[in-house]
Image 1 (cartoon, rainbow, N blue to C red):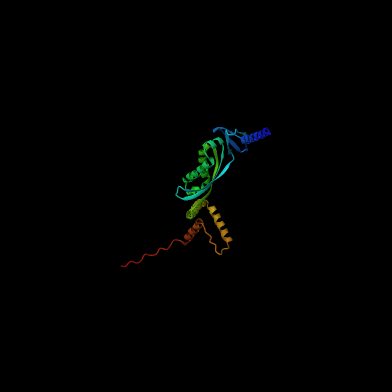
Image 2 (tube, rainbow, N blue to C red):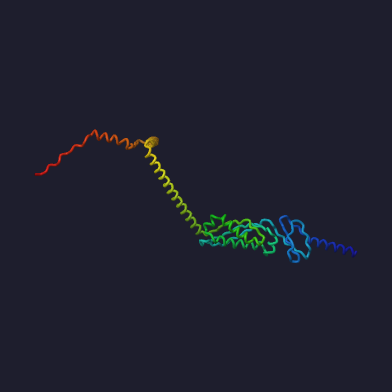
Length: 266
């Protein structure tokens, strides 16, 4: 009876020991195994057998991690205070370095992302912060990726989400945008006037070289005027037609009479 109890106790201890030594890692997990505190290997996925009390394992996920960067107070290069938040996408590519070289890679990456976001955005003006987000996202991503490479972490992407600006600064930006639109409208109008004057000058030169074209233009103008049902039509005559008529009229009139000189007093 005592022997059966001892056997049952031994079997229970064996089962507990076996349960403590077996680990199952999913496809996206890796286990960093330490033997007596020293790194041994990275194992997984699947079934992993450990020696109880001698070996320990730290689980690390290799899936893409999405981390929200809380709003940061940023002073831009042109001394404008804004609040900016972002989202960070990264994953562990080297579980050994992620466990050994940094205490908590999640906290370390979050803090590094916050400080890097403030540092990068503080080097640019507000206009660049609002209109060049893609370039700023790429700058932050490159800096973070270079600094987290020693931790076995790959930063895939950084996206700036919201940029909160003070209400007074919003009004100033609106006035600036309105002034910019007015400036562009005036420039476009001036360019249109310049192009129109250039084309009119070229047309005048062509018509001056070809009088027949000028006559056709006159006739086209008369057609347009007649379509408007005007009661009065002014028909312009070119000088090369009017000049011979004036010369003929002068010849028929003859020379002008010479008036006698005024009498002189004796």
